[in-house]
Image (cartoon, rainbow, N blue to C red):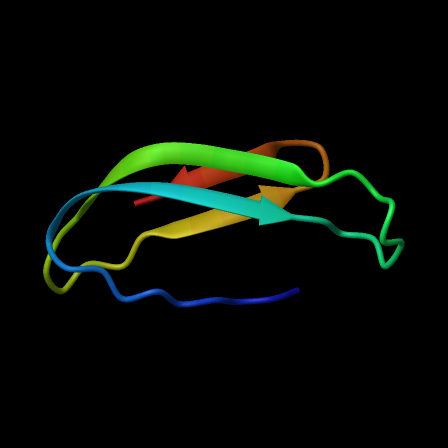
Length: 58
């Protein structure tokens, strides 16, 4: 499990996340890209589950 927090200014942002869950440098990366609406005082989480893939949790 890992966590990365990236503070964003309010407004629309195009976000891309690339991760691998294996220690093998040749392992395939999984990528997610979307536009999100950052709001003051709000936290949005992007999760990754083996059977569900990426899920954006507002």
